[in-house]
Length: 295
Image (cartoon, rainbow, N blue to C red; front, side):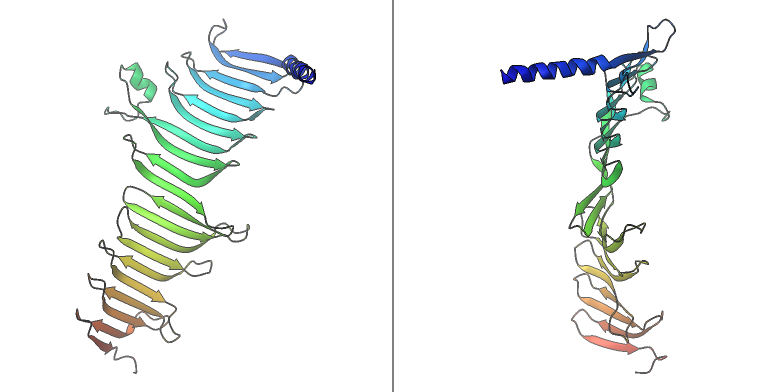
């Protein structure tokens, strides 16, 4: 009996909601033979409610989405303006804001005229290949650092990802066809435009060849430590700031095998080194002082 009462209650509610809605149809022509858009609105509030569809002047369905109280909600799908419902773009909405994955499809254009649209290529008799070209992510209307751009073959051209370490720190990893960059950030107060970079790693994609950079804890983000690797993974060049007070900076070069070759010592604020320590390949060292400085 309780189930019957519940079912009747749901049915009456649905009928009540349906009675409050009215369908709106808009057309491209005066004769009302070519639909332009179709949706339902709440009679009392004049707000869009439910499925919304849009057609091009070529009578192809190009947009399907959903509204809740005049705000986009759920999946938004856009199609190429050709027969067959070929997806151009999809997104997800919550309370009128993008929330979730946002995908875009592109097309191959092998003609000499790179400005031609997909629709123009199809109209000329061609059948261009369509491929997923971009994938982004949104949270509450704001684009995150999770991003991928694809080539026509499906390979990753660019890639960006944000990994949360804890409530105060996160790492953004970025890759393109040549480089890979990893930057660690520390969150600072909301009044600041940028978070603070703690360190950055940059190297050739799929190799050990690259830089590791560490930053000062200040708004200038001055580099306090830098390390460059060779393609074999050994150190090539190193810069160290913040050594004992009498030394402002050290610059170190390395042999192919990773052993030190020279160490240049600089006083704070000065561009000329006062001491160079050189190593031969056997590890024996010699010191050379700048004659302008007293030992």
